[in-house]
Length: 109
Image (cartoon, rainbow, N blue to C red; front, side):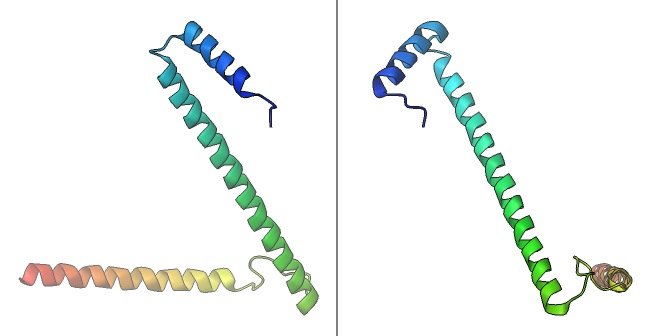
């Protein structure tokens, strides 16, 4: 990776102990480990997002080949948003009725 041998690592650690001091060295190493874990997680998150995007693009291309439609996107149906809105309104009414029912049961007891 960086072509650093064990003797070079030991030499760097000895210099770090002399310059930084043995009391602050564990805190510094902990901070560096935390930093590199964050960098590794960010790399993982970016690569998974890219993979998801590529998979979604491939699925869209397959849809275009299969159905021959130019308008194959995430929401191909024009009425999708209207149906979704109606469904949300129904769910909100149902949750309101459930909450009302719970409240009336609790006050009766």
